[in-house]
Image 1 (cartoon, rainbow over the protein chains, first blue to last red):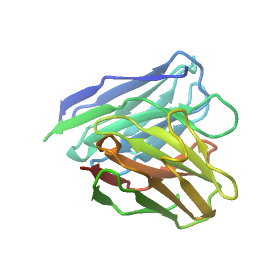
Image 2 (image 1 turned 90 degrees about the vertical axis):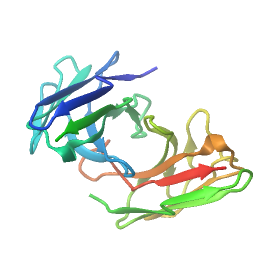
Image 3 (image 1 turned 180 degrees about the vertical axis):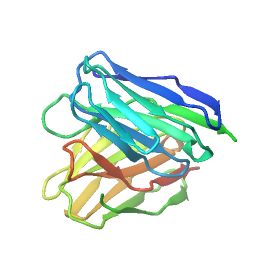
Image 4 (image 1 turned 135 degrees about the vertical axis):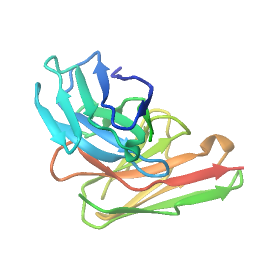
Length: 113
Length: 115
């Protein structure tokens, strides 16, 4: 079935460093969503991508929809302590128009001040 | 995006009992989703709840264990029935957004511990 693979599983970086994480699939997606989940909170939508090749920014965050439509990347520039959390990618399930999402396993980010 | 609240925010329950979780949205939404997130894991969809129809459950989840109500376009409940320690998880509700077909917005979650 459909599956999203996220890497790396976890990252530990110094404040100020840039971060890059990705999400890949064996099947084509027509939408990529990136979420961040803070401890004790629900996921928050960061960026939504709808077209192959699309590059979208949200502040220090930039996400790209891969040309093959089987991958997406999220970059964080000049990381700060509040970037700590788990980042999930998600994409639509291919069964019908039910708007269900498939979720990656997440990338856990720790930032050392 | 919609503002979503959940009650309770957390609870500790004894095995064999049931807990009903409420999800309230500040605007009318077509679709509401209930997820389970086990400790350190990703999100697993339990069911999709549309107003005026029966909830649609995912493989591995059944109505007897997780009955859902959706009485109107701003409210839904999920009941976790006959709980066991394996039901200890975060339960999240989400709603579809109005900007994109697949965008979902989440409540803060209900952290359930079953002893």
